[in-house]
Each structure stands twice: as C-alpha cells, then as structure tokens.
Amino acid sequence: MSVDRPRPLVAGNWKMNGLMRSSAKVLGEVHAGYTPGLRARVDLVVCPPATLVSAFAHMSVGTRVGIGGQDCHAKESGAFTGDVSAEMLADAGAAYVLVGHSERRQYHKEKDADVCAKAVAAHRAGLTAIVCVGETREEREAGKTLAVVRKQLRGSIPVDSNSHNLVVAYEPVWAIGTGLTPTAADVAEVHAAIREELKRLVGKADHAKVRILYGGSVKPSNAAELMAVENVNGALVGGASLVAADFLAIAGAYLS
Ligand SMILES: O=C(CO)COP(=O)(O)O
Image: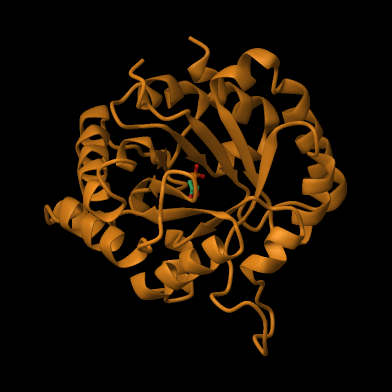
C-alpha cells in the first residue's frame, strides 16, 4: 500500500429509515462488530435520519464509529422551517454530513451551487462534507458520464476543501437501490477522473489523500471486487447499511 493511499471509509446512509428502538439495536451490533482488526483497517460512519443523530452520537462515544447527517442547510440559523443547519448537526455530535446526494438533487432540486454552499456550511461547522456526484442512466448511455461528474465536482466542491474536511462519493444514479453496478473498469475510469479533478480543486499536495467512495448497490457479495478498484477508498452504502451484519461484511472487504 503506497504511503499516500488514504485510510478507507465505509459510510452507511440510512436515508429515511429508522425508529429509535430498532435502530439502537442495529447501531449496537455495528459497535460490537467493529473489532480491533476492523478498526485498524477502515473508518466506519453511520448517517441516520436527523431525529437519531444526537442519540446515535451519544451511543457511539468511545467506539470510534463516526456519525453523520444526511443533509444540512447552508445558513447557520434562521427562518427555514424544517431545515437543520450544519452547526446543529455538529452540536448533536455529528462529525460528517452528506451533501448533494442524488435524492436531494432530484427531489429537492438542489443544484451544484446549493451543494457547494452546504459543503461550505459543513466546513464552517467543523464537519467533513461527503459530497455526492453521479450520472443518470441517460447521461451514461449518451457517453457523458465523465463530463457530468467533472462538472458536478467543479460546481460542488468548495475552495477550502482538503483531505480532512472533504470526502467524495461517486454514486451512479442508475445503480442506487437497483441491484445494478458499473463494471470494475467503469468504476476505475470514473474514480481516476475524480482524482484528476481533485488535483485541480484541492491542490497537488493533498489531492491523493482525499477519500473517494463508491456508492450504488454495494452488498457483501460485491464489496471486495469494488473496494479493490484503484482509487476506490471505501463505500457509501444505502440499503445494506440497515443490516449490521451486511454493513460490517462490506467493511470486512478491507480485512483480506
Ligand atoms: O444512495 C446510496 C447511498 O447513499 C446507495 O443506496 P443503495 O446501497 O441502497 O443502492
């Protein structure tokens, strides 16, 4: 493993799933399964719905499992009914926040500039922003994948980003929740392009240390193959992260 190779990160995006009692059980199982061997190899982060961030952060003290929000508002506070600021997430004990997930881009019409403002807010609050990018099926079929991803990166990544406060997640929209995944070669091509783009956006000194996660139908059965791809430094896991054994098995790809 080269010196510059970043420490892997496996993050679970629970989306709009999870009530207190059953979720605490799953989180407890994740804590129990995050063995010293696994801790030595990979960072684990759980991003529950906003209602569970504070409780999960309290429960995770001393476990080294990080907690993240799934979105934040760009402003620190104000008349924005229903929204949660990055400062509130940090106050609740989060260390990470997802921004620009395709479900936010699609259902809440978030544009790159909105995503960038949210990442700026995350940094202001001391959070690591996990900036999500990815092409739709139509864009892939039209051969526009790399152009789309590069444009999203340029528009979504703030200038103050570095390998501590930024993680990039490549999630092809057509692979999310569908059981479909790109080939290892396709993932390698996109991740190489992201690394190249980071050289310009984050700077030559630090760009190699920024974690680039793959997301979209990551399961225990395909994790080893996907995690072995060059420039894949971990996973952003949706459905499979709701089952502790599956989430841990995905992280376990880094044990072999
Ligand atoms: O959107 C995702 C994670 O953010 C991926 O979801 P799935 O793992 O369920 O495909």
